[in-house]
Image (tube, rainbow, N blue to C red; front, side, top):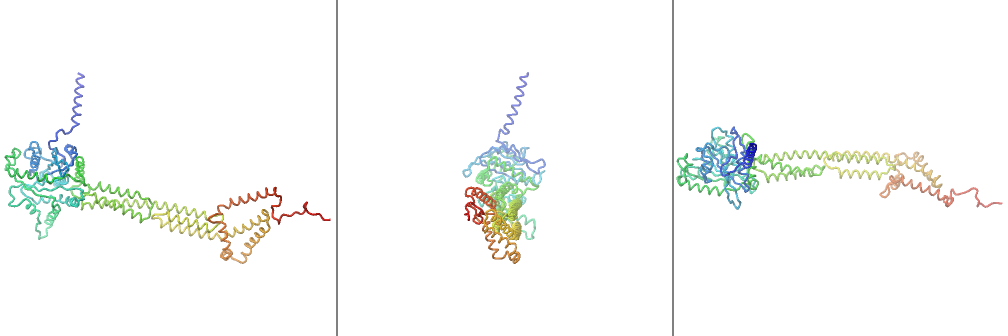
Length: 602
């Protein structure tokens, strides 16, 4: 018993696994791909039917039949597919499962179109104006069939009504948006080829083409009626489709329409059978693979395309070409905005405002050019283009703020660096105007070269003001510090001449310089006249030459030179006296009052 139980459980599991692994075994039947929601206001995808399409790897073309409720659309499709009512699409008066939403025949027809192996699907749509549906729902069915098909058969019984023309407004908008690009060889989205199919036995001596032209002719409006103007505008816009539409008449197959599914070709009107063959040839001649952005769509890509369309149509209460174009352009807009952001992100900030503006214009032009090459639509695409432009402006505003911040940081750092440099030059051990001017010029040049961006003008004013103050302060103290250095120098030379080198001439010259600086200049020259005296200019020039030159900066090397000189003197005094006695001293101080070599006197 236990073994039998486990065998039973295993069989049940195996059954579920096998049944779940293949959702569709027979594709030779119709499947729903789009179904209405319970309220019959919006549409939703049916995964069962999409599986039949997704498995196709070759380019796809779709032939859709639209028209009023109970106009024979399903029967027409069965005739085009050479299927009986039992195996083909459900016919309203025969089955309870009348068409709801959009259905597809699961097995496509394989055709060779201009050397391209194409899988052609036939779509059956729910009829217009049936009971219990909103006009919005009918519009969505019409819009969806218009966008996704390659051939759109508008099946009309008896004649063309004004409502039929008005309903074409959506197809007209699509033609205006997309067909112009196809005509210009800039293919983004090729609309369906429109086929007017009028099922009528007698056309009152007119061809179907003449009937269509007459229906689309202007309505006289001498009173200026706005409603008539609107109707005439629709008629005018239909001319946009031009050679993208054609017309065909098909007689009634039999007087007993409720028994059509039971009749064979021999029982049908022979003119109908003949015209049906011509219709098949006409449809086959105008079929083209579905092209989106210059690319053929395979099964998976077609399903993705269908999802995008449905999302656009369910977006608002009333479907419009504008909302459809907006959704299609959303991905393109994001890619173009990313392209602009990447170009702006590669800029080395900070940079001059004009250079940043030029970079923005170049990046914007490149992004807009990419959008123009890829976008859907012409008139309604302007909204997407304006949106792209606005979003690029927002990105540019952020770039401007970043550029200002980076410019402020850089210029502030350079300003601080120059300020520190000026403070260092103010406290030189040996003041020199040449070194100060060289440092000031170097600071100014580095600021001019490195400080860029919108903050440069503001910081230029600040740094020029700071440099001017620093130079004025340095000049004010320069002459006084130089005078004090000369006084200190004279005293130092007095000490050196007296006690170190013991050369009286040096000592005397130092005393004369000290007395001259402390007495004569104060008695006979004022501070101002002293600094403008030619002698003082000579002293300043000599000082500048000694203290600072491209070869030797005495302010930097004064202490090392002084130490080396002191060591040299110390060495000479100590080592030289032991080796040469006192002969190395200067003659003036080399005398002895009593020496062994002095001659004795009697």
